[in-house]
Length: 184
Image (cartoon, rainbow, N blue to C red; front, side):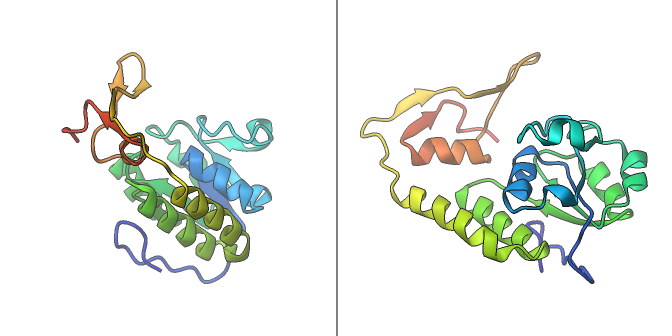
């Protein structure tokens, strides 16, 4: 399999020890029925609530505790080009097999979901989830008149989204105009 950074990913067997550094993909792994396989998550992985106390926290998305991750001995680490720092991703590659997503729109999101399902031997469960997403996508009815919006994702400092993000793509699909859509 090839990840979203065009790197070849090889696993000798279905991973039973998975570490997720991406909150949305942590939720997806749980939806796939893999909660018991999760050995670690970030402090931002807060859903579903069942993982809050039961899973080892390995830092934030930008400040992973690599030594703790080594101790957890994951067979597969799920990362994101947008969420995680390149140096930390590289260091994780010396610890485990690492899948890196690069989700910038709905197509790359669905592609990542399919990849992760394949890597975790969960394609049957993923089919329903992906079909539901694709059905809802086909039912999207964009606004007739574009409403200009600013989508803030962080405070202290305030941060927004540029044109190269999943949120920007979703706003566009719903008929909104991102006032920062001319920037990366």
